Each structure stands twice: as C-alpha cells, then as structure tokens.
Image (tube, rainbow, N blue to C red; front, side):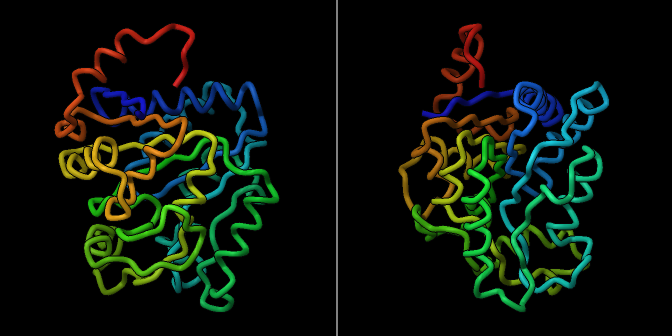
Length: 260
C-alpha cells in the first residue's frame, strides 16, 4: 500500500515535498529528479524555489521530464520543454545540459521514444519521480489501456485529456493530439514515486489508483506495483479514499526515523 499523506492545502503539500527533495539534494548533490508538468506540481516548484533561496544548491542535479507534445513549434510557450525551463530550470539555476525532455519534433519522431529510453539508461535512472494524475487516471500521458510494461513512446491523447489541457491554450483546436510519454514501465523504474493530487476533480481517479484494482483501464493503479510510493494530497482529493482515516492515523503516528 502506498503511503498517503493528507495536508491542508496544495501549498502545504508543495512545501512538504520540496523540503524532502531539498534534503535529498543536500545529501546527494547529483540527485536525479523526474519532473512533471501541468498545474499539479507547481506548488512543489514554488517550494523548491524557496529552498533555493534558503541556500540549497540545485545546480548539479539532473532532471528528466515525463512527456512532451508532438508537433508544437520550437519555443512554443506551452511545449513542455518551455514549461520545464520556465518553472524549474531557470528558477532553480539548473544546468540546461542536465535537463532532459522527450523530443516532440515531427522529424525523427519514430525514434523519439527509443532515444529517450537510451538517455535514461545511460544516466542510471531517476531517483524521485513527481507525478500528477489526470481525470482519466493517466500518469504521464499513459491513457487508459496503456500496458504496465510500456516504455517511452508516442501516444494519442483522449479528448478528455485534450479538453482538460485546453486551459493552457487559446482553444482546444491548438492542443496537440499526440505526445511522447514515458511508459508505465519506464515510470516504475524510478526509485521513488511521489504522486500529487489536489481538488475534488481528482478524487475519483485518485481513489481508483490508490485503492482500486490494478488494471490497465486505470493507468494510475500501476503505482500499486512499486515498492516505494508516497501520495501527497489535499482533503478534497482525499475525499473518496475509503481508508483515509487510517492514512491520517498512520501519518500522525509515523516513526521519527521513517522518511517519506
């Protein structure tokens, strides 16, 4: 069972996760962080900026992004390369050469997944992977039906996912139909998974991922197969969890020596 931590707000959750990441970086300056995009991880990035301002040096870490849209022009502000640069690379003072994002360019797209897998393998993998969860249950852009053994590849986005992401564009017509995403099998190779979810709109998918059956119909349920998973949520996202009172009890009575 994943460790589920319920905190009072996204800001509190972000500060909590950022403090853990900063402690890991201070202990191992060449830490490897798996970064996610969308609105969910933004409180963590805000917390990491506070940690940097307080003196934590992130300059030697390596980052690997989960996914990228296919076909957006180079420099498009909603490409995930641009988002990661804007939210993570520049504010934290990361070396851009150490920040990796799948290649979504149409030229060579047929090898984009293999190239990203090779880069991950050559580096030695990810220490901590940040994850959000979509209303369809997707993690990364692994939509329902994705194999738990899948590797980085091109996927077709559901209309629901495109509708959810349209808020970042002028219209849904501008949201790409395809993406390059780490597969579920790729994600499960990270040494620690930290899944974040905020708001009532994520409650149903979160409950299915954490407590429901392990099924390709609910890609987020793949986290149940991982030996080290921390789920950090606000009360609204936790509202459909059957065992939320136990999670609170475990959280309040956690041994002092046990980290997240």
